[in-house]
Amino acid sequence: MIKVLELKMTVTDSNDRDAEALRNDLKARDVFLINLMSSPGSGKTTLLSRTITDLKDRVKIGVMEADIASDVDAKRINALGAESIQVHTDGMCHMDAGMTREGLDGMESIDSRIVFLENVGNLICPAEFDTGAHKNVMILSLPEGDDKPLKYPLMFKKSDALVITKMDAAPYFDFDLDAVRKRVKAMNPDIRIFPVSAKTGEGMDEWESYILSEWEKWRNA
Amino acid sequence: MHELGIVKHVIRTLNDVAAENNVRRIGSVTLEVGEVSGVVIEQLVDCWNYFREKDELVKGAPLYVETLEAVTVCTACDKTYGTVAHGKTCPYCGSKETYLLRGNEFSIKQIEAELIEDAPETE
Image 1 (cartoon, one colour):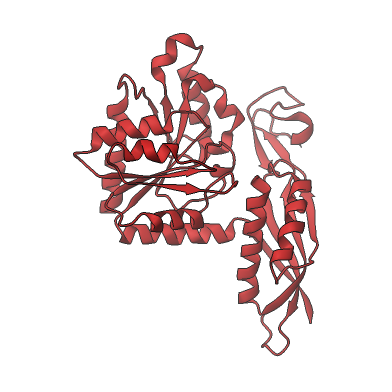
Image 2: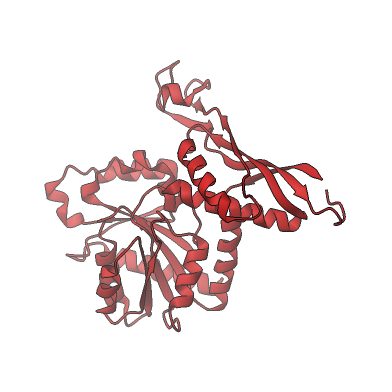
């Protein structure tokens, strides 16, 4: 027999369930997962390299690199002695919870207590798919301009923290940091904002303290 | 290829629904898509027509898409207006202090389902 079923389900329903399950599994495995989202070329790998080096005596950090192709980023992270795995999305523009789980399963034994997922460089689709991460962090590099929050609002709304990278380039660009703060806070009042330069070290302390304190909170929760 | 990922998720969700509701085959699928959800409907249908052939449950099933009008509210004068025509600026008072009321939806509204005959009826 034929029957019409009224569903009214969001399209990402199956992914939302996978993501929640993954978050819980990671709690049991004592792995704190941070999803990093940004445009291509925002300095994600450079920021991570510095963060891993600065925190290496405090906590072991691993990285899952999601890219459409190539493994150049994973090689840079490996060179620091950190655990890393390269995940290829085969043309897909974002990571979902299923792919994230496969990537984590591919890391032999996760010794790292904090794992960063470097999502595909894209400000649209990654904002719509929950990866199962415990925290979502967005990176905006200074040369991209202070109007990015107006163009990609969802990404700014979904993030727990915003890291503004390449602050050392400020003298060469008309980037209005206060305007960014205002625009972002209007959409997401709870977001934490960290202007940094991985090159000069400016702001890195605040960013790294934030990671450690969020990790502590999560562990004790 | 945003639409490709979405279609894969729709098909997975439908497989979950089918397992829970004794559905053997799906005859058609109706989506509700907001005007400003950012999805390109032509591409979505193309991806659907390709992927449905790889899945026994939805093989051959047409995809219907119902578009929902996007509406924005102005916080300055409390009026509502069509988002697509006027964007972020209120056409009545010129304020930019506005927010999207609806138009961002993306949901599976309903399916025509062929149930497994000798299975007990489920509501």
